[in-house]
Amino acid sequence: MTGTLGTVAIVGFPNVGKSTLVNRLTSSRAAVVHETPGVTRDRKELTAEWAGKTFLLIDTGGVDVADTSPITRSIADQARTAVAEADLVLFVVDARTGITPGDEEVAEILRRARKPTIVLANKIDDPAQETLALEFHRLGLGDPFPLSALHGYGTGDLLDDIVAQLPGEGRAPVDEAAIRVAILGRPNVGKSSLLNALIGRERVIVSEVPGTTRDAIDTMFTRGDRTFVFVDTAGLRRKRKHRQGIEYYSELRALDAAARADIALVLIDTSEGIVEQDLSVADVARKAQCSTIVVLSKWDVTSVGIEDVRPELERRLRQRPPWVAISAKSGRGIARLLDTIERQFDKHVARVPTAELNRYVAELREARQPPSRNGKRLNLLYAAQVHSRPPRFRVSVNDPSLVTRDYGYWFENRLRERFELEGVPVSIDFVRRS
Image 1 (cartoon, one colour):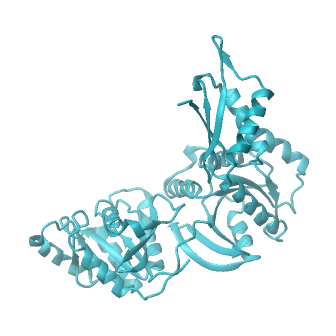
Image 2 (cartoon, helix red, strand yellow; image 1 turned 90 degrees about the vertical axis):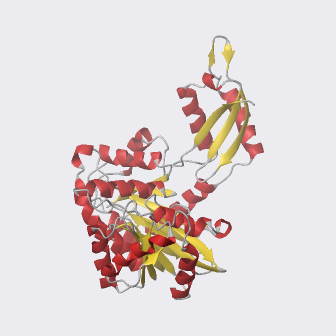
Image 3 (cartoon, helix red, strand yellow; image 1 turned 60 degrees about the vertical axis):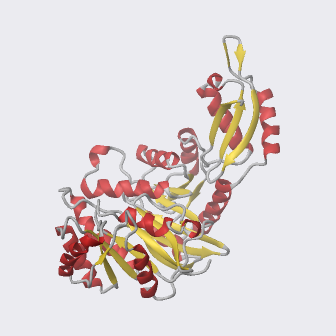
C-alpha cells in the first residue's frame, strides 16, 4: 500500500465539534475515504483525499475537564500521544465558549512539542462572527482559523492549508489483511514480556504507532508475507469493586482493544495454575468476538503438567481454543505461537463453500433428531455463511421458535468440529424460511 502526505491529528475536548469536523473533512470525499478496520471507538484513523492527494486523519477522543475523577490526568497524555504521532495538529476549540482551562492545557503541550499546529475556532456559522476567533491568539499557536464544521464554512481553505503543510511522505494505513492481536490477561501475568518476546524474535519492525491510550501501543511488524498488529493491554480484574480511577478506565480501553482485534491471546501464568479470573478473561475475548488462543506462560518454571491443564480448559471454555505453552524469558514456544496465530486468523476469515455446508447440515439432520413442540418438528432447510471475520451462518428453518438452547449449542459445536473452528466465535442465526 502506498504512503501518504503525512499524518494529521485532531485534538480537543468534548462538544467542540471534533467528530463533526472529521465527518466534514472526509465525507465530502466519501468515495476515497477509507476507515481503517479494527480501530477503537475513541480513536479513529481514516485516509482522506483532497485535490488528488491523501493524508491520514487521526480523530482522538476528548475528556471532560470538569470530571473530578483521576482520569482527568489522561487529558494531557491523550494529547501527547496524538501529537507525538502527527506531522500536523488540528487543535479544535469552541469559538462561542472562548478559551477554557482545558484549551490552555493542550496549548501548553503543543507549544512544548513544537509541532506545526492550526488552531480551529469552530462553530462560527456566520462570517460576521469571525471576530470570535481573535481571542485564541492568546494561546500562542499562531493565527486562529475560523470555520464551521457543521455547515462547511472554511473547510475547503482548511484542506488546502493541510495539504500545503504536510511533509509530502508518511506511513501507509494499516492494511485490512493485517492480523490484529490483543494480549489479554489478569494483572501481572507477563503481558508486556510476551509482547517483547513476540516482536523481539523473527521480526522486521515496521513501526510503533501510538494506540488508543497512554498505556497501549500498537506494534506492527511483518513475518514473511504476514503483517501483525499487536496491542498490549491493561490487566483485567474480575470484580468491579477492585477497579477504581485510572485502573477502571485502563480496563475499559483493554476491552476496546479486544473489540477491535481478530485474535485474543489469553495469557495464563501456569506457575500459579488456572484461576477463575483467567476464565473470566477468556470470556471477555469470546464476547468481543475474537478468535482465542490460550497462552500458558512460564512453562519452564512451573510444576503444572499438561494433563493438569487440558481437562480444565476443555471443560470451562466453550469454544475449545488451541493453547500454546511458552516461556517469554527463554523464547521457547514463541515461533509456535506465531504459527498458531496465523492458522487461527485463517480460520477467523475463512468461508465455507455453501454446497459443502449444506451437505454437512444434511448429515446433522440424520445424526440427531431435531426438537419438536406440539407435534411440530424443527426442519433444517438450507444454510449459508453470510459473514466472515468472524464466521456467521444463517440457517433457514420452518420455525425458529423450535430451536432449543441445547440444540443450538450442539449444532454450533458440530460445525466447529467439522470445519476446524476451535477457538473461533461461531454465530448462527436460525431464521424462518422466506
